Length: 245
Image (cartoon, rainbow, N blue to C red; front, side):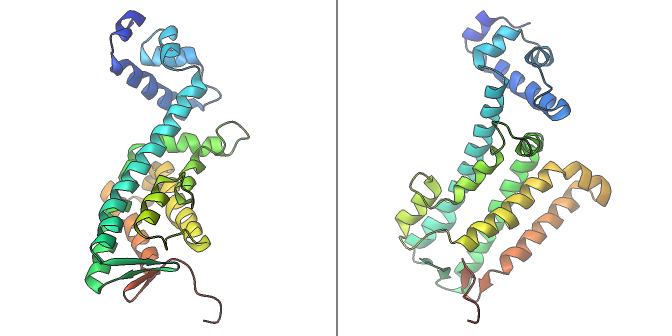
């Protein structure tokens, strides 16, 4: 057992063991059925040490939610800086209320390549953390504190200065806003497929008889097809045109 005294000297490895043990138990037994003493045994620490880092097991799940959200935000902000802000400053991209307008086809193709790389990074991150995503999916079906934890990712599409992503893009081009169409597309055709694919990855792999590379490539091709539906010449539409137009 690692003592609390040792932990006071800054042994961060213990916190990681507690978190990893929690993920394993929450995934195998369910969050409600997991007890703190079981986490302590799995992490090979005493129970007091868990309470040194976390108030309770709910606090551990909160930590997982925040870590997931912060990592996705970081990946997204990196994409925005390279593929949107930089292109706007260089005159390759102009954001209009209903579309992204590119200076030429080369700029559009560069942007689409970066979108693919961005989604690929999100996919890899989701697969690395598929156990956490599965836990949050199960919690989303309950009427508990963490029912909406997974939907925190939807906050990334809010047209609010509280959303660092929206604020960064709108500071670069004030015409930017999230249309209802784009929010629905991101949630139901981008975010949810990613979450479901990660959560059920092992089951899908077993049913499909595809190896990891084949399965990953097939999923990314599906996303490319969806993105291609938004492309019109040198533009990417952010909302559907009015009926009859």
